[in-house]
Image (cartoon, rainbow, N blue to C red):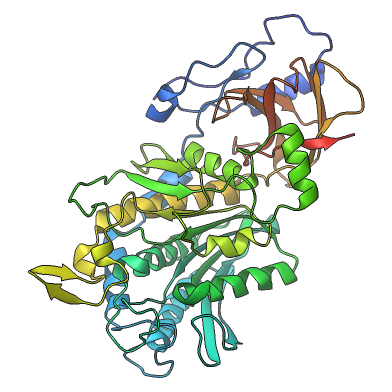
Length: 482
C-alpha cells in the first residue's frame, strides 16, 4: 500500500478565475476515491507545481480481486494443449475433418464458449461469424473464414463495447502450407486460451458495458477474420471504445534463454492509423502525437492492471506493432477505434512460424512444451483487470474540447455528459509536454465545463469520467473548439 488520493486542497497560487463552483467542489469531494500507489508510481518523476494532486493508480476492488483469483492456470494449459492437438489450424486446412484442421478447432472452441454462455443467465450469446473470402493475398481459392464470437451484453450501456481477441489459425514455415503440422501453441493458442478463460470467468458476472470475446481466423493469411469482425461491428453502429489483440503471449523466455516472467508488452500507436488530413493538421497545430486514443487506452491498462493482483508490469511500446509486423488490433485501428496488442516480452523465433523438426539437436516448432503456463495466466489477469475495469467504469468522455475563441492564459475545457446511471462526475488530468504519463488530477464534479489557471501552451490536458464507486474511464484528449 502507498499514498492515497483525496479530494484535497485548492491550488496554492491565486487564480484569475475560479475553476470550481462551491457545489462542484462539494461533488468532487464525494467522488474522489482513494487510489493505492504501485511500484511503478514510485518510478515517476515528482509531479510539477500547479493545481491538483499527483495522479495515482486505480487499485483493484474486492470484485476484481475475486474475479482474478478465478482465472485457472490448469484450464489455460488444457486449452493450449487441446488446440495444439488439432495438428494444424491453418486457414486453408480442412473445414470438415472432425479431428484435424481449422474446422475441428472452430467447432471445439464454439462448444466450449457455448458451455460458458449457458451459465450466464442469458447475458452471453455465442455465434459462428462466417463469410467467404474471395481469392486474395495468401488466399488462392474462395475460402470460408469463421470467427467464434461470444458477446456478454452490458446491463447499463450495452452499445458501449470492448473487444478482446486471439487468433485460432496457425502456420508453419511456409505460410501457404496447409498440410504440415502447425501446432501454434504460442502463436496463438495462448491468446485464444486467455480469451476463452476470461469468457468463462466473466460469463456469470453482470457488467455495465458489453464485452466481445472473439477467437478469429485468417490472421496469418492477412488479418481476414478480425477485419470482418471490425467491419461488422462498424456496420451495426457499435461504439467500440477499446480493443485488445492477444497474440504470442505464451512464453517468458527469450531465444538466449533469459527470462522475463513478470512483464508483458502492450503495443499502442501514436499517430492514429485512421487519421484524416484535417485531423493531422490539427494534431500538428496543438501537439498530441503521444495522445492518441490508443495511447490513452494503454495508459489506462497500466493504471488498472499493473499491481499486486496481477503481479505484472505492463511495458507500453510506442509503436503500432513490432517492426514491420502486425496483428488483429490493426483491423480495429483502421476503423478509427482505440486498440492495442499484448505480446510476450521477448520472442524466440525457433518456436514461431517453424515446421516441427529437430536440427543439430535443436527442437524447432511452436509446441506446448515451450509455453510458460504460469506466465499466460498472469497475462490473462492483466487482460481481466483491464476488461473488468473498462466495463464497470463510465465510458470515455465524448466531445471534449479546449475553448479557443479568445486568447487567454487559462484554459477552459468542455465536454458532453455521459449517460451512465451511476455517473458521479469528472476529473481533469494534466501533464507537462515532456512527460509521458499524466501527472496531476483535479476532481471537478458533475459539470461539463471547467476553467483552469494553466496555459494550454505549456501543458497537455485530458478529461476522464468517474462513477459513484470510484471507477475511472480512460482519458479523452481534447480538440480545439468553441
